[in-house]
Image (spheres, rainbow over the protein chains, first blue to last red):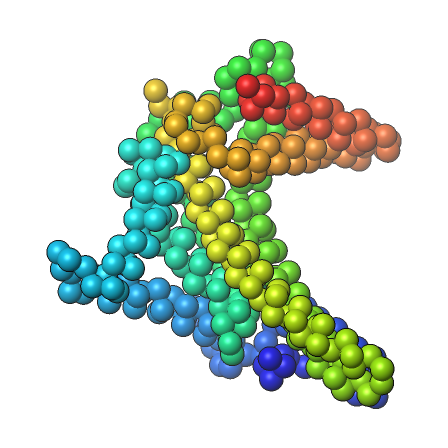
Length: 270
Length: 68
């Protein structure tokens, strides 16, 4: 586990425990280039994202390449995965109209899932979603989509009126409520969507690194503390399974919330 | 967000996140207004009032919206 952990900032003569730092998330660039005045750095985290994306694409392409009436195992898995999102999220949360968003929701779900799970895949062991850029981009996509859907299905005026003046509130209270609703829909929705995913992956990675480094440190410390090394090791294993749960859950939460926002944007139409 | 007309929009998680978002927005928006007033007038106590008013308004709104 410790083979791929990046150098920490402790001085070499410091005998104490070297805790991981935020540098975990800023590995050295493998290659860099400038395109149209923008500087790009390809790091191992970028490569992990490519691998995760390629894996999702390969899985779905292979599963439908030779469709049969009686599905083979791979085709069955692909269909089950897609219908989980289509029936379990799109139809369940949005309703009949949600089916046309099923491809987007499925793409979001499996892209996030694959990238999250990279946090515990050996030799990768960091999720690209542990950097704010990727969750921010995904939240931005969802934000553009639900606003666009709202404007398209209700019209600009009614859509923003519905956001600003939610029903069921006595008129004088709108003075207080309207700014809150506008902020919560147009500012806090994308913000919390991005930060929830990012922070879960960020914290999860640090948690695993702490226990992995702790195991190594306790083994090497050379005194009585060595008896605690197995405890730290067991915790690293337990937390890896816990992280798997968090990774699946966060991909699911992101997708369900995207669907909920789409449902809200469609809804006030009638 | 919906008013629970759809069969299963009332999943606990999405309602919970909506409540959280509303509470955050209330505190930040009216706390922010109070902070601006403080900057303008050179006082210090208006932001505290703003935070309390914002929290109260968002709790009120949560009870109206979800307290059925």
